[in-house]
Structure formats: C-alpha cells, structure tokens
Image (cartoon, rainbow, N blue to C red; front, side):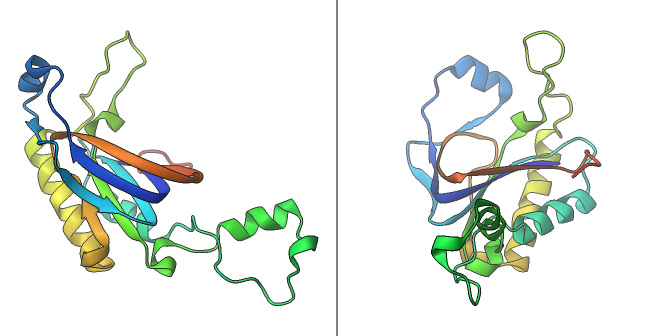
Length: 186
C-alpha cells in the first residue's frame, strides 16, 4: 500500500466531466458530476493506492502513520525560548512536533490506483500491481471505516472510489510524505 500524505491548509474533491469517454469506459470508471464531493480545512490530504498483496496489516500500518506522523509545528513556544535567538536548525526541529490528532485537524482520503503504476519499461504506465477494483473498493471502505473509528468520524472526508475527480490541494509548506508498506527503509 502506498500513501502520499500532504499537509494542507485546505483541500477539496470535485467531480469532473469526462475528457476521454472511450478511455473511461474502457477503465470502467464512474464519472462524478461537477459537484463538490468533499472539502476540508487545515489537516491532511491523503492519496492511497492499494496493491495486489495488501492486507489488513498494511492498511493498519498506513492508518497508524496517517494519525501519528508529526507534520505540524507546535502551537506554543517552549519555556525560555526567545524568538530572535532561535537557530534555523531549532526552528526546523520545532516544525515537526504535532500529529493530526494533536491539532484536531481534518483528513481528506482519496483512492488513487495510479500510485501503484510501474513506469520502468516503455512509456505506458503498468497498473498490474494495483489491486482489482472490487477487492480494492472493499479494502478502501474498510480503511475509511477503521480510520473514522480510530480518530473522529466528523473529521474524516473522502473522495468517491473509482471516479474521475479533481483534487484541489493547498499544500502547506509544502510538506509531502510518501509512505510505502513495501519499502523496508521507511
């Protein structure tokens, strides 16, 4: 499983009109009307790709990372800290103090099978490592259910599985992390 976690000041998902209807029919993707599906304020936008070998174990690992990774600065100054004497290194270290739980932020989760694309050979992306649609949808729905139970149902928003969408992200920082359960060096 692969997740791209982005710290945002806001993010939204809106349906798009089909630009290549034959391709979309071939891929059997749903088309969402030009309606807004979800919107969040300060928090995380998470793009999730589910692979053929992914299980509940990988899903739980990703959920734990989303909820625990410290991507937000502390909201208060440390005791005795003076603004004009802070070194750059200290400032950078203080940037990574709080998780999404600590700030009570929102999370927008969007399924994105293209994260599993292989592009080493040729110019056409290979999506064979992405889980098949029905199995992937089941796991995505379980991920949403589980993260809502682990965090807060009201603070979790989602895109529409299998749909062509526009995702608008106002990246804060920018801060973007890639979490991949198949890579040991995380």
